[in-house]
Length: 406
Ligand code: ARG
Image 1 (cartoon, rainbow, N blue to C red):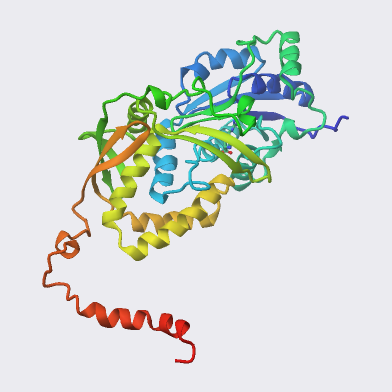
Image 2 (image 1 turned 45 degrees about the vertical axis):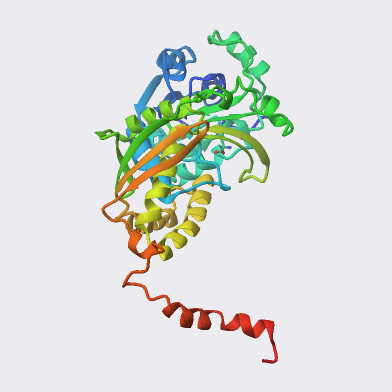
């Protein structure tokens, strides 16, 4: 089945250098008969994916390839917002893929504007979350740009690896590894995700050869590693007293956490499109940061704010997962979160050991923790006999329930 192509004069494709986007590029040129610019974002996915990417794009027929280094922006404006929000999807997923998409799509839209393109394209499949995240961002930032999503186009026939390899060979596009990849992976500075292969059977434990950013738990050293993280208003600013940019700070914690097998998560999650899928994640540095931030909030936030913020975190995580980054509500929640973070300043010492990041020490000039109040030794500020009346009234309803006729 073929669909009549809409008229397009220049397309900016979100390009990764992998096989999928490498065949989409010439396919777009064939179908639309127009210029195609390959746009790649450096989010810390590493040399494996980025080295030689411009040559690859050109070999696939790109008229131009633009690579934008967004690592600092990704760390500071995206990952650190998740951290301040304490956002976890379904309790454990640290949103490493979800948080990257709006930034890639935003930079892609800016590239389209600068290059005078009238369309943007992405290579996400029609079954996942990423297509939604890309397209919602395009719609929010450039509603007039045409959106091309080949995998949802009935005339796109390169959805199997064999078909893609055949197509690439026919066009003389170099296919680097003809070896079949076991997992579908997505890597950046914050995390790596693994799906597919033997993971599709939920009875299978992740193979120890799966881990990329961390060692298998069984290979974690017997000696703990310590790190001190300094926060200023909820933002991590230094490691062991050394001030670092966000991306460097995360990279260093990834190395430490990875060595101790920290941040490995195995989850069957609910995709936005209604499918349950099995995902394995590694977020070593992020996991250390979340623990340190949690500990600091535990002493700097009052109970009401902390508890309300926990509810906000659920909504925030859901919005990030659903690709609703450029929604007014997300921005409003960020304003709330920023207010809560004003006093979240101090240092936390973390012990990394056998897959776990544990708080070893907390220090904050804004600590609300009062040893005098908490101590079993009575002080002047708290009169235990006051609690008698408080409990009598607080528990009044309890009595009524147990003895209805009074
Ligand atoms: N399930 C995760 C998410 O939706 C990870 C998706 C991985 N994406 C990918 N293109 N391989 O955020």
